[in-house]
Image (cartoon, rainbow, N blue to C red; front, side):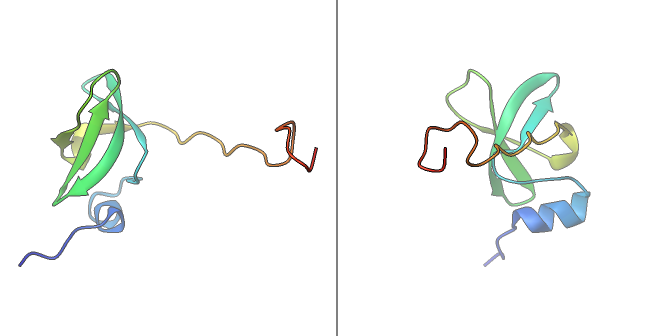
Length: 79
């Protein structure tokens, strides 16, 4: 039985910022990484209902969005 590959394994082997939810471009089309399957990453292109497998070096990695500031204007008890 084959050992499962993790996002960390993909990051180390391909030197890419692989993670679930990462935004990428595939041949110029934007999409979102959904899961790891073997040495491929499944990516759901924007507007599609399913994901397709791509090798990590086929993807152009987009910058991760900045985290939302907590407790500032969210309408919660700390405001």
